[in-house]
Image: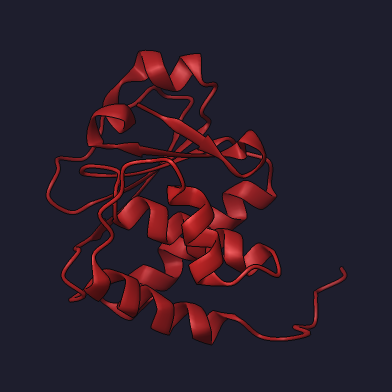
Length: 150
């Protein structure tokens, strides 16, 4: 089942949800971020944004792939696109990457952001995956980062 988080712009789901057009349209999802390396790519409607970042739970991921997946989620949320982040079961990769993106947009730590996303929801976060995301996340957190004004 698709779960809404973060101002009803960010949704967490599994591989089935990411491939179920009816659910995507019912929830008015504009973008799907597919993190399931072990699933076939989804075939979505022409009007959906689809980004696939094949990540593994074992911590063996390329750091650039983790970074760009977090950046993509953050950019879509900031643009106001209703975004579904999905992995195979929706209980490890998707909540961790979504939490990293939310953390970068707010003053909330990665741990606190993750705790809020998994609160009252099934989860089974891989420690190895969380550790690798935390390492990349720490390099993305730049205090008082200058913003491009024009």
